[in-house]
Image (cartoon, rainbow, N blue to C red):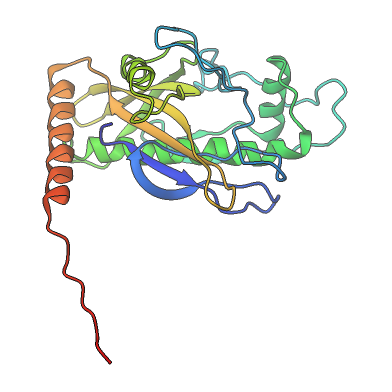
Amino acid sequence: MGQTASSTAAPTAPSGCPVPHHGASSSSTPEKCPVDHKAPAACPVEHKKPSATDTSSPAKCPIDHGQTNPLNQMPELAQSRAPNQSVDLPTERTESSIPRDGSAKWDYPSPQQFYNALVRKGWETPEEHVETMVEIHNFLNEEAWQEVLKWEKRQYNFDDIQLSRFKGRPGEMSPKARFFMLAGWLFPSKFNTEPPFDRHDWVVRRPQTGEEVRYVIDYYSAPPEPDGSPVFSLDVRPALDSFSSLKERIVVATEEAWSSLKEDSKPPEPSVSRQH
């Protein structure tokens, strides 16, 4: 699946909703979602199961990342209460760890802005779960950034990488996601048949060279932990916009395949029995 994916399960958040944490490696990244705690954990967004040739996306991030303020590159979301809203939600925004330029970092939407985005899209979400949803949203983005940095360190020798701009593309399935959907349709016992529930494109800037590199991030739901905690997986990789990105993708895929082959070829460790 490429270098950027690490499944993540969820410890319990203060609100009682699960929050994902790192689990097994697998080309993905996590985030939290409010769930019915009496039922198996699941993403709060309804996921359709499109065919392998379906170009639609089953779910969307509530934040329309395409509509941004040109001054701060963030969505214009109201901080006022929504009609019929019964619970006050915080309006403070959290600063991310993701550099926007040499002196500023990106800010995440406040719970009130997040809720307003949900209302605008017609999603019915219990207001008491919104703060947890925002924590999950932020957590997944932080994890995605760490995966981007892993890729960048392979080619760029400085630590001043910046997220120049980004765009949510929930209605467009990436070629890689489409390929794995087809593989799941043909070989359901070997490949996941669930499509990604969201997609982002991030453009990273390398200040020392002036280069910009686009990354594609597919967000997947994974089977829950035994205790019911939800798990999410992120597949992060450079887009095939340049020869260097293509080369790096091939190199990483080869390294992972070789590592897996060596693991499979190891002889089993001898067992030791003790006679009494």
